[in-house]
Length: 168
Ligand SMILES: Cc1cc2nc3c(=O)[nH]c(=O)nc-3n(C[C@H](O)[C@H](O)[C@H](O)COP(=O)(O)O)c2cc1C
Image (cartoon, protein in one colour):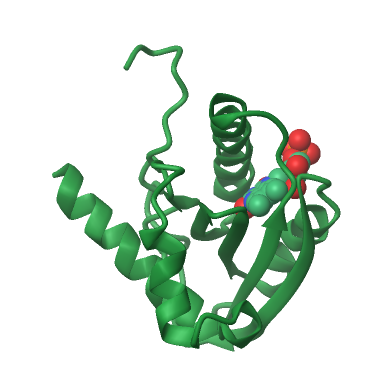
């Protein structure tokens, strides 16, 4: 891979924001949506790569962490950060015409970040890999409307860690 080639791998976040007693609570938002990406496999891959590059730049600046899964025409994403940062980020995301039918599964305070090393981790580099949504489907009885915030967060986190093991 050359320097010009955008990478699908998330660069590590440069230390998670200082969080501890007295710090602002961390909120987690999880949603599922249907992709509206045009073109063939290469065009779609380019678009997803561009979404990731912008996400990682903005999220690093805003102290937002999370994971994005793309497969089988759908996105699942988890965003974590202060309520304000997650809210502002999601405002932009939900207006994005590159997806539709955005279904929020959870928006709640959590005890700690689960994705603290990823400004936006990505699962789905192999766009034909049905295994990814399969993992979510298996936990929800194959019905996206039954995905819960926890199912999505747990599954995404597990897949991200598995991919790290494969890459290592
Ligand atoms: C599925 C999906 C996930 C996205 N995730 C993020 C994200 O985590 N952070 C972000 O800033 N933008 C994300 N975006 C892009 C936003 O919709 C929007 O284009 C972007 O935030 C605009 O940033 P800019 O004003 O810096 O160009 C996502 C878009 C899509 C379609």
